[in-house]
Length: 180
Image 1 (cartoon, rainbow, N blue to C red):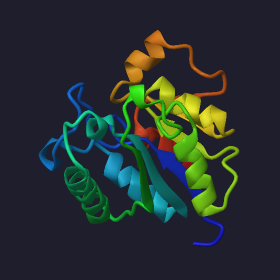
Image 2 (cartoon, rainbow, N blue to C red):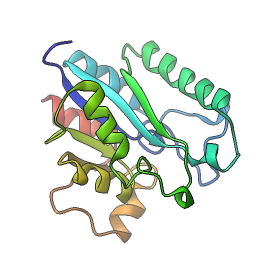
Image 3 (cartoon, rainbow, N blue to C red):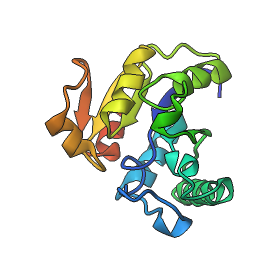
Image 4 (cartoon, rainbow, N blue to C red):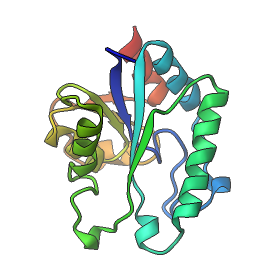
């Protein structure tokens, strides 16, 4: 897709329901209302959609790679059924204690996306529901966008957001903003 625009989405709390106990099985992965259609709309408007997600449940031993792959397979199929596509999924399996470079708020995953797609991330929308998503976006010059689903309302209430953050009720609202 030459010339396609790139958008980076967090997973839990943006595309699907979040859980303080982690999404540990495909059965626990439940799309948020409007999120699948929003991804399809992005594709129809020429956007490449990349998911970038911390998945410390792996590092905590709560689930393995086979389960994560099954969860992502369910997500990709659900998006496809809605007429959309996810171009790639990047994830960090580490816990906070691992002090890796890829776990958001560190920008390692976003930097890897930039390398893989051979693009600068300046101005690229990064949609998340937590401060760490927005901080990772700022670290690479991307456009932080907070959605109020998942942990988003708590993030808006409790955190000092980057000054140039956009705030939307949900992914569908953010996508309407980007495609009109």
